[in-house]
Amino acid sequence: SIGGVVRVLCLQTVLVTIHAFTTITSPSLRWAFSSISFAQNDGTDAQQQQQQLSVEDELFLERFKRRRNEAALKLESEKLQRPPSNSTYFQDPKNVITAILKGLLQPHAPLPYFGYEILYQSSTEHWQDVLRKSVGAPIGTETELIYRALSRTMERGGHNQFGILVGLGTDHNVVATASLSGRKLSIIENDDGVQEYYTIEFPWDTLDYYDGTAWLECRLRDKLSDELLCVLGWSLEKSSDGSWLIDGIDWQDFRERYRPGIGREEWERICG
Image 1 (cartoon, rainbow, N blue to C red):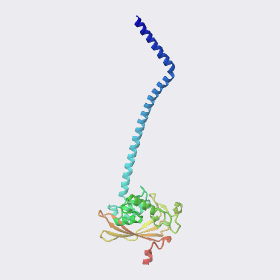
Image 2: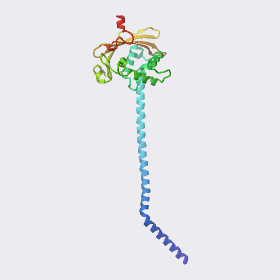
Image 3: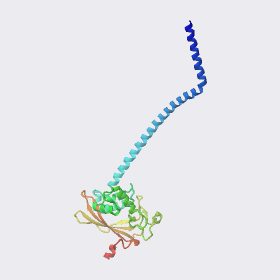
Image 4: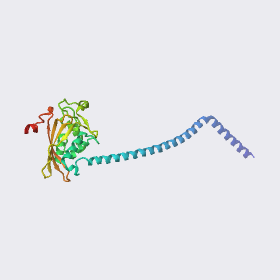
């Protein structure tokens, strides 16, 4: 019939048109289809890579957490071995003073300013106030900032008689220098790998007043020559939990370049 013929002709026309369009645009279509396929594959690869990164990140985070916890436990263990403490070991003021001096000798181990934290936390409110004022810190200053200020003050180069406490060498009868090589002759390394250049001597027993206060003298001597460098008198006071705290330090310097001391004579000249 006429209708059937028309439908056949229309179908042929459509097929020819589609074929012609495909022939003309086939490069573009092929690129488009290939791009779509590539994008699909690329998305799959990216997803797999993201999953792989996620696993690696989780492993890294797990290792980080484990190391952080280990470091925190080590730090807490370290703090338990340092004053202030009411443990039996630190009931002897000599052990308290020795631990404070050794902490200052390496003031940034195991953490920055750790030695200054020991010094400050092992002090009474009165001596903490003295330390704060010595670095010009106002009332209410955060303790971390006070530690930093103490570090800058005690570790400064030049004519610094207190540098002997914080790892700067004995500075004994020599011009002060910021170079470590200039101090090596006075430095000895102990079994713990800590560089020491003085020994700590307690010539007398602790003077315990049996009212919660005590006084103790210690002497710093050159580790090589045994020459007397400094004498420190420690005024101590017990806290409410039984820990010995510093309430004052009397400093007498016997190194030639610092005699006769700051505004006073040494005990030796007064008493002898």
